[in-house]
Amino acid sequence: MAQGIKGPTPEDLMSMWNASGLKQKILFTFLMIAVWRFGILMPLYGINNQVFANIVNTNGGNNILGFLDMFSGGALVKVSVLALGIGPFITSSIIVQLVSVVIPSLEKLQKEEGEAGRRKLSQYTRIFTVVLAVFQSFIFMLYLHQLPGAIISTVNPIVFYASSICILTAGAVLVMWISELITENGIGNGGSLIIFCGILCNIPTMVSNTSKLVMARPQTQLGLLLLLAIFFAAMIFIVIMQEAVRKVIIVNPKRQIGNKVYGGMNSFIPFKLNPGGVMPIIFAIAILLFPSTILALVGQANFKSMAAKNIVMTLNHYLSPTGIWYYLLYVGLIIALTFFYASIMPNMQPKDIADNLKKYGSSIPGIKPGKPTAEALDKILSKTTFIGAIGLGIIALVPSIASFFTKIETMQGIGATSLIIMVGVALDLINQVKTHLLARNYESFLKE
Image (cartoon, rainbow, N blue to C red; front, top):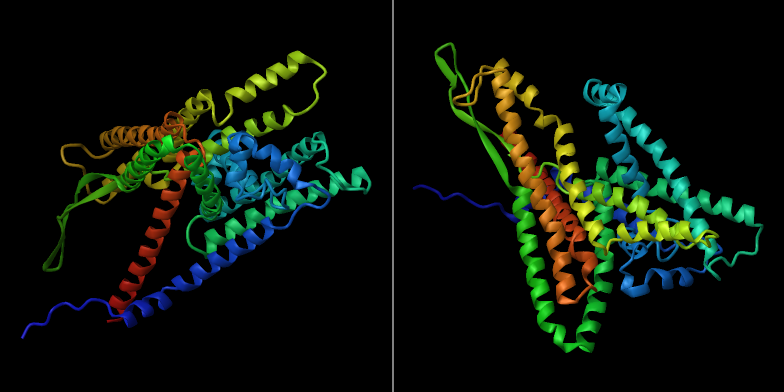
């Protein structure tokens, strides 16, 4: 009598959970996130954070400082020891990756020296992170100095400012260390996960502000429903973009070993429509927020020259996250960084793929091996990457435009970049969990 296929029992699921090490990775990730959240609650000594919070919350938080606070998980508004957050590390990573394409010695480290080269690049990234953290903390303290009543310390000013810069820099290094530990020993990319958690921490405030707005203005109820529908549609589109692949058919040759014939079956190479995932979004934000932050902080200073102040205010207006020029630059950077990220990924190099196919005797139907294959793959990758980049740009613009027309801007922070990051990071976490469980299935199969 034939027996049906049994599904996994609770004991099997528990065995997979324990044997694959998934539980340890998840618990470690939660522990590191808890350490990061605890650090956010530790205020910088001698600062009246309420004065700074009033500036951040001006106009509902729709300014550059409110935008930065959202990605720091509230550390900025609290003037915490971790106020700089993951920003210096992300910015440093971008700069090192961009420079490594231009400088041959760094490019050699990335492509030819394997793991040792990548470790050196990581060390350069850490060093540059410290430099950026010192610079940003110095600018931040200058900004606080301009706010009446923000600094309440009675100690020697030189000692106070020097110690504050050192503490803020150490906090940025601590966040960098936590993100690297999560990447190596936990689940998901540490930097993306910290940004993800920072956005999640701001959702209750956004929901509360939105509910107050709708209660005060009942005519916005229909706009709220429309906005939520657009958010839901955008989430579906994001999932499609993240999971879509372009399959290139590969013909494998038959090989006879003894009396058996192997191969001869067609396979395919999957090229993701959005190869960079959420990284182009995060990189674009970091690139735009760095000059915006400097301009916003410098703009608070007392200028003797009115012309200089007008120049700073004009640049700050163009780079503000609520301005049209910001979004145009933002979309342009997303497109450029999507192509850049695809160009540096090892599994998306047409020449290398073509050489490997030729080496093993495989080919694409109707295309000669070697250079013609590389040219065909380059065209395919260019088209798929372009579609993915345009798709990311559209997703980034639509929710913010919807917030503008529905006049419900209390959720604008979650509308554009945040929505993409949250969905992208969540999908990445799900895929990593699936990978661990799949590895466990293979382990069980080999043992049997």
